[in-house]
Length: 173
Image (cartoon, rainbow, N blue to C red):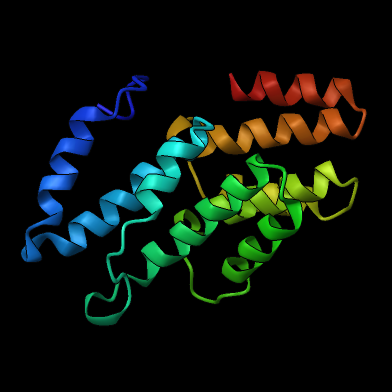
């Protein structure tokens, strides 16, 4: 429903909102909201992503979903970057990247946000972040690696290296 290219999230929304009323579903609701926000952010749908991130599920406390908290922060970093707020994006991204023990999936949105912010600002440190992001995922898994490929293409283009941008695009295909 969400990952098959459809921008219509109404079916997900209906189930998600219904589940929010069930105290036994709080962990699933929190995790699903973060994942829906991640997908919406990749589609540059800031309205939908923000709606899902406003879910007030306590992802830490009794439910111990700290990994979802990291994903939420990384997704917020991507949204800030998408809105042109680079300083905020970097602050949010590094609040995730500075944590130890995070998984590649938890780090991915923050790595991409930080690297892209650096690239757009003409600063260094872009490629190590993007290399780590890509190494942590199957390069053919567009759900995760697709955003890394896009960031790599943009970084090369912004650096003025059209050949590298083309090569990254070809690798992504």
